[in-house]
Image 1 (cartoon, rainbow over the protein chains, first blue to last red):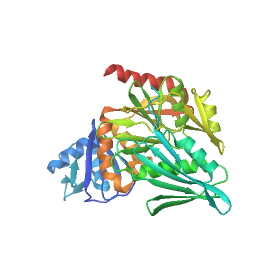
Image 2: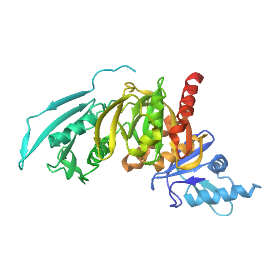
Image 3: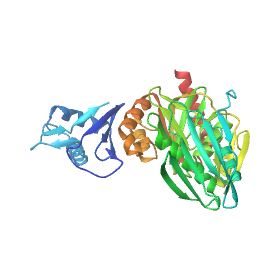
Image 4: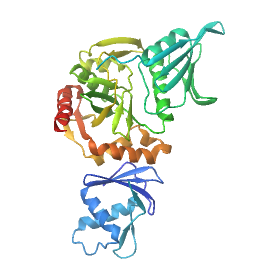
Length: 90
Length: 295
């Protein structure tokens, strides 16, 4: 996951664009672009259904979720429940 | 590339007298964009020579007025009665500063077209945007590409039409600085229209007069291995966000994001490493033409 600005906050509204296997999020409040690589995009998409990370064997997924949360792209809802922040696809 | 219709309508108004120094006004009709200039005649002549081939199509930006002080030490830019900027001009390099601010003002008043501070060339209807920091080698790469058979599309300002996935010709002479000339070697066939502050303004004979498909984005970096490497489209969008473009204008942020995300899926994205990007011009042209063949 790559960002063009290290400002983080949860609960922001995003625009999302899928480009090949990657997703680029635009944090509308901060004017910040966030690139989700293939792995991060898969994890983030899974959060659209309020998925849990506990069932995932990969530590990588949890690490990605934590970074997504720092960027505000997902919100932790207690325990291992993660949900996407408000987003509009283009 | 044909010569096309002359896109400029110059109207010289009677000279004024400002504090004993002669001043003049010029109206430049640059396609859909009108630029009013006022200042010392010799300075206006140089500005007109550099901007006279510029043509804005695709939307109608508001007219901009740029006034140079009689002593050429300052300039102001305005839209209507609203002054947008005031600039202290250096004794050497004032022409580049004025042209740069004129072009930047155009970029800022656009509402539909997207812009990138970049250069561009086209070959066989396929356009290639060359993005990079100042001094990275954009102009020398563009000059080498033109010498190898491409047409000049833009230098400094690239305009993109997100609805049609095209880039529009924004013809401004190549700003050839000493290091650009060294990196590019021989300049492409063309003519020098102005020279000031150590910069030669070189207008190539091969110029695009019609939109081209936004087929390729090349990001010129500094250092690294001297080769072309593919860049994911997501990474390309992020890289555009780091450069001066419509994405860096708060009021354009959302529509710029949508527009670039709409253009990029049909484009090939590459990075160029090494200290002499111009040396890779043949490879860039090969990639661009391979895209033509694949379509």
